[in-house]
Length: 96
Image 1 (cartoon, helix red, strand yellow):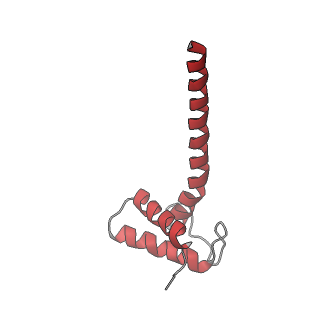
Image 2 (cartoon, rainbow, N blue to C red):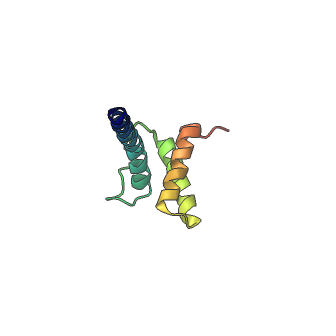
């Protein structure tokens, strides 16, 4: 009985670890895009440079979302969530 519980515990730990890595590896590029677009890291980006497969219009939309969040006094975390939401909902494209 103790061995079964121990094995279940190890499997659960492994599953949690895998899930954590999956989330981290998924969110890292999105957060990096938001930070770079916001100009919080390093020198200003080169105009027209590609960022993870996003075209200029998509990067401009991300920048607008971040600027709006900054104007509202939202934290970098909140701005990142806003950009990630827009990426999931519309791929940062204007849909009108």
